[in-house]
Length: 179
Image (cartoon, rainbow, N blue to C red; front, side):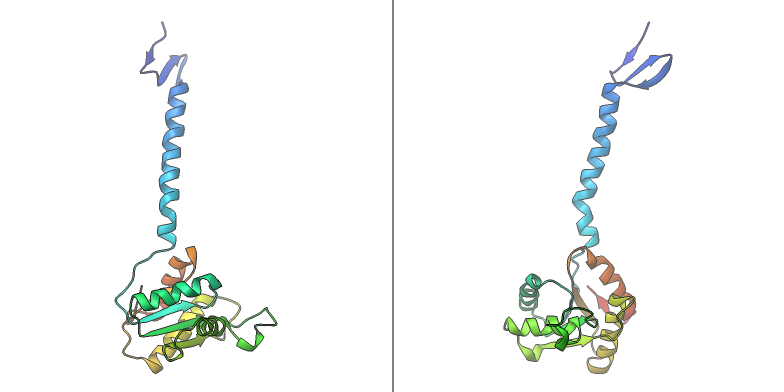
């Protein structure tokens, strides 16, 4: 006599899953996938601000985010906006700007941003570790021009955020917190 336990498993020469058992496993896997997919963006693009008066904007961002940077600056009452970037390797029309920090900075000025609250800090490194080298250039600029800075908030694009925050924090060391 064959027994069917709760319509999840059956016994026929061997133990195995019934159609309902397979469906339950597929449903559990699907639920884990949905929960993970809904939360992965928050993991890769964190929004955890520090109490800071400096906003740092990575220069490679898309144009549509420039207005968001201005809004962030005004909403949270920062005193200084710093763009960072690396040398340009393409774009003959952009060549006079030399690096992405200048491209982002000049674009912000064209959108009406106050030039007295804007600093453009570009790095010289192009080949490897562009984000980290931008952070090192920023660290050196802060040491020289704003040694009192204890924290800053970094604004970047999309899922690059977690990596950028990690690399900027590594470059800044324990002396400056990066949000």
